[in-house]
Length: 546
Image 1 (spheres, helix red, strand yellow):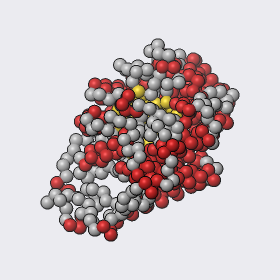
Image 2 (image 1 turned 30 degrees about the horizontal axis):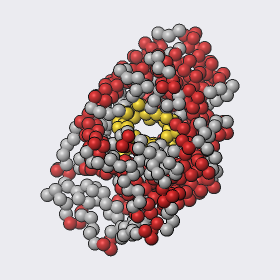
Image 3 (image 1 turned 90 degrees about the horizontal axis):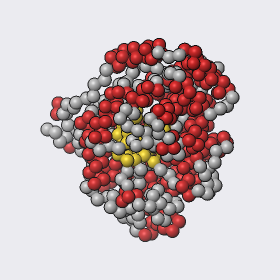
Image 4 (image 1 turned 90 degrees about the vertical axis):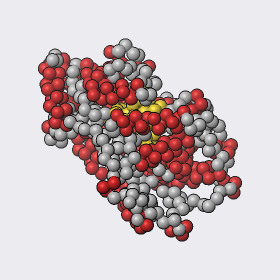
């Protein structure tokens, strides 16, 4: 009992094992200096903090500053999420990914009929400027880093909310820290992309993406703007090569749009950042991060012509993979997250979030969140891996794999560019075909046992031996009723004429091609809600979905 039958174990015969990375790169039995024939330490490696940044974006790395220990937070009301943030902050977390619920992610207020049953379930609900103020209760946006897990057009509203909160707290915009996700293709495929484009026109979303970049660049120089959410892309099932190519290809597409707006390539990339996934193939993930950083530096310098060295530096936050978590034997997910977090650290991440072991069953509990935090703290302060910078530099295997991944990613980006860039690749359905092929490939490998998955296709235990786990309880109906009453009172307590004028200004500013963030700030100060602002922007584009 509890160890599985012989048929459930991984084959140990050498002839049946797969000696390649999860993206199909062949792995040799041993590596020597002969495997580095395409590798030049002077041009391909360099020093940490120097071009091409293979060894890390900063010279001192974790000897000078440990990565931001970030945690995903968001459920119910802003007040409830704020209480969880305070709990984690008291336990040593210093950065937070703020996840929003489905209605907010599509730009709807909590009392919209489309929000029924979904309020606060998958994240926190944000409908008003007051909601953002409550989320920051006890914290200043100049001292605690929030990463808002969101996309345009919603991110234009949350960016405006953040600026208003800073103003109200007397904090100069130039001092605001954190990360504003700004990926117009936050979900690049399938139902999520189709749903997003149903509720707001894609061209309008792209315009607001560039508006956000322009506003942040000119007013909030310490605020990161996340150009590509590579994490959600990786969660669709693509491999490390596709992950790197789709992420960078999309970023370069956005950069070209920013240049067309007239933005300076030596300014706007300074705070560009990426959100990436660290999956379970340890060395391949490390090599992926190093390869992406090197390829980014070379592209920014050679293709975009950036002369400011800080614009060659690729900075990213990492979350351990959600799609490697299992509902079977969920405690094993602690081990998976530890391995994936080490890969992120060896790969040079600036910020790290570990998935909690129970996320296959529901939102993390306080207990599972604390274990994830303690795992980061053990890695940071006990393991010794932070005592020297890029300890794997010069490894025959790691450097060879980094170079091979760089070449493979570069070739895939060339394929995307031949299609006219990532935006066109998405619109044409090409990316959807790539993702579906990856999903089919992955499932086939798991079903056949070629890719071992502990607790699923090997080393299983009988269902009755599975240990019950505590699951975070959601209260959608209760949250929905409370929020509807809150919004009723919020709308009743406003100057209707000033509110109406502010919404009218949104429409005229859109038609006059103004940057929309300051105009949205004005609407928020006059108590316009998230849903009302979106509706006004849809009217300006003659767009209706109802």
